[in-house]
Image (spheres, rainbow, N blue to C red):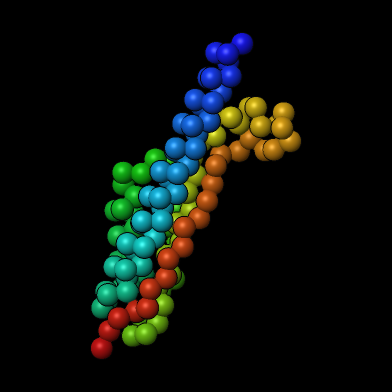
Length: 116
């Protein structure tokens, strides 16, 4: 009886660790992309997407990057990174009244556009 309970607890720790790592990676990528886009003199949105995707190269799960950027100095560069990791408890979640989909989240970062 103890082994199944310990297996569930261990699986929960793995599940939460994956979600935490994906969330932290997405947050870092959003910040890095917004920072790079804010100092880019040409094509700030393109540079922000490229930098965010570069930061996500070592991530776990799936990521989707969205950028909105003003081109004038003082404007805003906003990067959103959606993340998703598999939920190993997916088949058990309906027993507790929850959906069994993947674990998801969004990281958002905004920087003021530099320039002269």
